[in-house]
Length: 370
Ligand SMILES: Cc1ncc(COP(=O)(O)O)c(C=O)c1O
Image 1 (tube, rainbow, N blue to C red):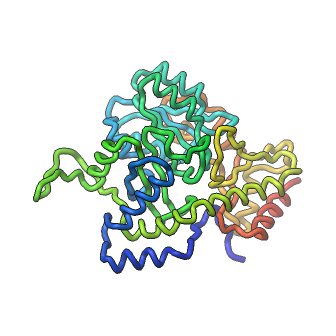
Image 2 (cartoon, rainbow, N blue to C red):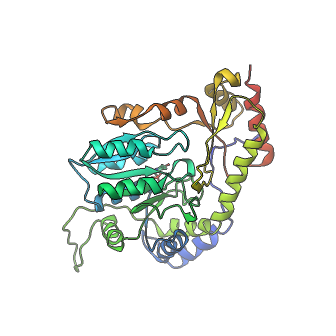
C-alpha cells in the first residue's frame, strides 16, 4: 500500500497549461507575467491591494521586518507555538525574539500574555502573530494592543491561506502578512511565498529589496543591502493553477477534519484543536491531543504505530521557548504550548486523502489502546 503522507501536494490538473504559457513566453526568470498575475489574483482574494511574490514565506517574514527598520537592539514578540521559520527572520534581521505562549482555547498567541510583554518591554517594536495550523489569532484584541503601544503587527499567515477572521479572509488582519506556498501547504508552488499589505510603500520597498535593492540607474547602483528573494515565473504559473482551486482545497481539508471528529467522537481521551469562535480555520492539519490516562494510549505510541504502517504523522510544533537555539530568549507563559507539544499529534490531512485511507489511520490509532 502506498505511504499516506501528512500533507502532500494536490495538483489541480491545470498546472501544465499555465507552465506551458510561461515556457512559451520565455519568461524563465524570477519575474514575468505569471508572477504579476499571481500577485494580483492573491491580492484580490485576500482583499489587500498590494502583494509581492517571493521565494518563500520565510523571505516574506524577513522582508517585513527589514522594511519596518527592525534590527539590532529591537525586540520582536513572536508566538512560541509555531514552526521555527516564524522566529528565525527576527534573528536574520539582527533583532531578538521574545516568545509569547498560546491561549489554551485557540492555541494561538495569548493576548493577555502579549499585553504583559508589551507593558514590560519597551524594546518590542513588532509582533509576529502566527495563524496556527490554519486558525487565525484573536486579532481584534491583538490589533488593539499593538495600536495602543504603537508596535507593528506582522501576521504569519503561512498556514492560514483560505481561512477567515470574522467575515474577512486571513491575511488582512496584520499591517503586513506573509503566506507560504511550501509543498506541504493548502496550495503550493513547491516553494514560494507572498508578502501582502495595505501599505503600498512598504510593499514597493520590499519589492526593491527582494531583487538586490537595485536603484534606478542604467548600471547597477545600490544604496542599501538587498536580497535575492523573488519567485520564479515558472513557479508562479503553478501557483495560479493552485490558487484557482483554493476554495475546494479548504473545503476538502475541513471535510477531512470533520470525518476525524466523527470517527473519534466516542473515543475517550482524544480531543481536537478547538475552532475559535471569531473565525473559520482552513484545517490545514488536523491536530489531536491524547490524554494517556483516559485514552489508554499516548501520542508517541500512536505515532510509531502509524509509522510502522507507513502512515506519516507528526508531533505538534515544539514551542520555540523549548528549542535549544532560543534557550536564552525571554518567554511569557509557556506551559500551554509545552503541554500541547507533549500530547499532541498532527494526523494525515491532505485534501486528496481518501475515505478508506482515513479510516485506516483511525483503525491503527484505535488499535494502540491498551
Ligand atoms: C507558521 C509558519 N511560518 C513560516 C513558514 C515558512 O514558510 P516557507 O516554508 O515558505 O519559508 C511556515 C512553513 O513552512 C510556517 O508553517
